[in-house]
Amino acid sequence: MKKVSFVIPCYRSENTLQHVIAEIEDKMKQLTQYEYNVFLINDCSPDNTVGVIRRLCEEKTYIKGISFARNFGQHAALMAGLRHSDGDYVVCLDDDGQTPADEVDKLLGKLEEGYDAVYAKYEHKQHSAFRNIGSKINELMTRTMLGKPKELYISSYFAVKRFVVEDMIRYENSYPYVIGLVLRATKNITNVTVQHREREEGNSGYTFKKLIGLWFNGFTAFSVKPLRIATIIGASSAGVGFLYGIYTVIKRLVNPDVPMGFSSMMTAIVIFGGMIMVMLGLIGEYIGRIYISLNNSPQYVIRERMNIEEK
Image (cartoon, rainbow, N blue to C red; front, side, top):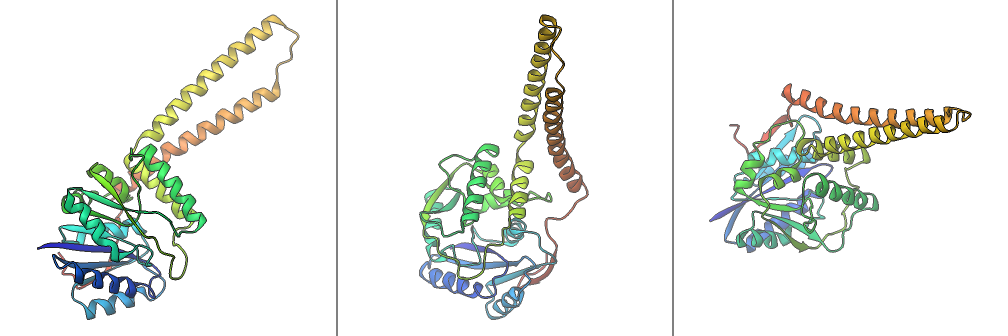
């Protein structure tokens, strides 16, 4: 009998988490061909999420709890759950009830067909306008920087096979980006359409600052294309500057009375100086992340494990 591990990052979900667990239980009672367990990762939530997880773990032995010492983000929480999971299939979903746990059979069915990873695709997303814009930017970034197929839809509700998980957890650097790890492990990925519900309560934990940080994690951890783009822009700027210099010399030779343009000179300095600073900042971002990784900065720090034996 195959085993399914559910991995759920938890943040501000004290009032929704029990509903998600109940839905998983009801669905898995129908899928008798699988046994299952659930890993709940508290990302240092400021509410009583850890208390709810602790109570669930006391009531049900198949529920496992992990509590972080501070907030490390959704992707770090996913990595912690993946490392502790032991299922043949691993299903990752949200804690707010928007991702329908009762449609997990659709994802598992695609894995049984032979796909290595399956992402849920939503016909009608119930996110806020801000989250939808963020998702579109993330879609563009993953397609451009990480080589994601254009037709593949990426979401937080997905299922992967064990060998994909084993490859993902080999990544130990400080800035995990789960989408990049899945795309690195396999290209045998598909989508399955599910419903997307409205959030039961609260708002998304992703602020604009967190989304920017997530995008930086994606392309600095798994792609050098930004550096190549910087090289192209730098070379193009140098070429434009060289041609403009030739133009200025010729114009001066043809008409010596033409005054040298202070405004054009300052414009060129500001434009090229700004471009140089942007490129240096980008290079500094890469170097900074390399430095942090060399210092063995952890992906996460676990304060407490519940129903889990420490290895």
